[in-house]
Length: 196
Figure 1: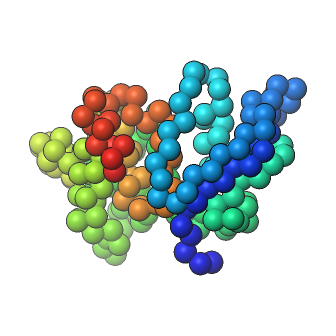
Figure 2: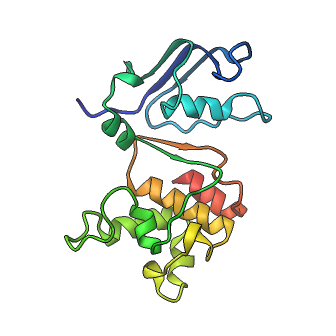
């Protein structure tokens, strides 16, 4: 596969959840996002914003219409490749009973491996800086080696979200989806996260 640019196109998409097949959530939605552009989908709860993200994550298939990236149906990309191109941060970040660094690189490598790291410290720090997490991490007793506890119990909601954003950014995705991922952040952290 050639390197994708990340241009998204949603064309005349209709969608109903399997549990409610008679209730159309998306009714002929069309949307085009050029590669490299920042787009915000805003609206009241229940208007389909998270459903669109679910379609882009390939959790669901549209009933009709098409969802493409660089003109290719998103379902035509190999699973592993597709998920290197797209990253998501949701409302409820998932953290693991590991160090802050291991949580940031989670899924990219085996954090407990003696083989060394394929993700450099500089990459981890840059992602944390962009997510406005580096300062609070640096102030932790063991910095990036600080254990966060099960589900990140040692961290505030905003700190968890910043770690989840850093995890998405360290992957350098072409497409970054934020599903209310800044809801627990202060205004400055939200501004920096959106700028990243």
